[in-house]
Image (cartoon, rainbow, N blue to C red):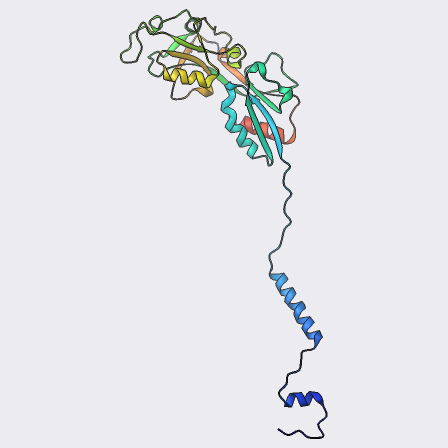
Length: 269
């Protein structure tokens, strides 16, 4: 193609030669701004992360009689973000509510700390091996058995039993607790005779009775299960059997601790 000598406009020359002109810088900037706006509008909204709860470690003491509360302790702690429990078992005599966030025992306490609350009730139960045919005992029978005044089951069972593993000469094996245990204090009307067998706690006493046809023990009602048989106690005043579950602390719990204790109380009910 020939060019006219009189063609002096450079843009028209580029157009005729098939050359494209570069976009103006302003146009490119506008395109970039529009692209950023579109990308920003399509991006998901970003929320700032919630601050993590400050970890807390609470010391919880309980007697062996209330060890069954352990699952409730942990379940209620799980509802409190950042709360972790260190649970230890001690006899009632060794509980020190001033050195723990919470302490728990069964039955009344002679010298309660600054804070003591009843969060439930449990009833004393006398249990025997499921093979034992006995169904009920009087208060006097219970005292005589645990006071070592009934050495053989023939002195307790009115009629012989067939295939139960017991006969008239079978020894009575009564399981009791140390003087510092709350179960012993709650059942202070039950004596501990010289032939009674000392159990470290209700769990051990229940297991011993479950494994021995001649065994008998008294437990807080929450420990009774299918491995033992509960015996009806006749002539007993209800006040002799029902005892409170106490929560103890050096001061009245507030905030998260109060919420945790209320949760534990609800699970007992």
